[in-house]
Image (cartoon, rainbow, N blue to C red):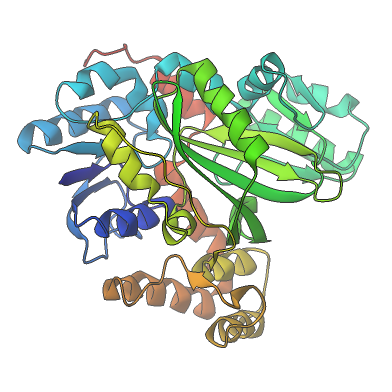
Length: 412
């Protein structure tokens, strides 16, 4: 099995590599960053430096098709938000390689946080109270705090702000006007905080039919509000809701939905969704290799449902350190967090690391030591480190505009 990944910088890519490595797949990576998390792995055969899919989408598509013509791959696996671009070429890609991609129109309805809110309303699925505005000045009339301000297109928490006072809202409005220009109109969400515990469901669909899913809850949140410690859970009502969602969109491929569950009332609320599988190590260690299902769907193979175990605890020390450094933690605090991991204390108790897996892949030490060393030497570099990685795979409104200008299923 020869698999080509569409990027290798994200933690999702790193965990996908572990999942595919268990299947003894031959893995190649395309990525614009010279030293990404995924490059250093015994499971990765070759890394190809490519254009940025957000800054140069046409060049990225040409590069990808040239690579597929140069070598026979069994599967192209879109790891992250490249799905927004590649869904426009899914018919052409399908002529060269096995690939599981939803229709571009379905991705448009899901990728935008504003469109996703409207989709939830159509399906009568719960979400926090949300107002959609089209200009930064409209933010100033909002008076219910705290709240979140969210750009319709953003990744890894970039473009999401927690607002507690009117002064903070004015600052965000001024920031957006200075960034976009005073006459720009783009959708912005003002969303009330959801109650309960942050959770995620990861799912794989075949032409609208749910074939595999896994839920986990956050035990600790890190970079961009994502979980850096997880525990597998069972939420049947969420599985049913997401099954309806995928069926409504005739979804084909991976789907990642974030939600909150109030353990007291039992109420759940959806906050956003993405056309990707996300970080899969908790599912893999829970007995459900979601990436294997994606390969089967990509190749048109039939699959049998497999249930994942609940209660499996995982964490990422690396993301915990980066998140703490971004929030201003001192070297002493970072050292304390490192020691807690070494001795299995707190969130690290009875928990497996998702990124640093020495027995599976000794080469994982290279990026782990490099990143940890940088953080201890200069903790303030965390923000720059995150931005550089997210720029490789994150989707912004400007990138969406560039991608929409490309013709469907045609190469320039």
